[in-house]
Image (cartoon, rainbow, N blue to C red; front, side, top):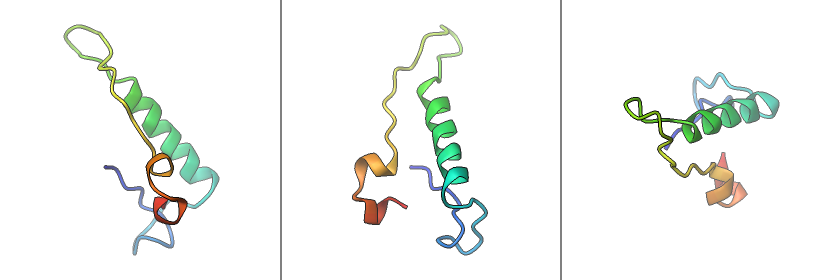
Length: 61
């Protein structure tokens, strides 16, 4: 699980709600989905979900 240090939710939050948050989440998801085995170069073929995909929107952020 990865938690974003979100302003207004975390005491020392630095990431703004909205576009900045969405851009960061999309970047993290993209990077995780494209991890490869450094020895073989093959994709690890992992599944990545965002909080919005798993939790009801009240609990997502």
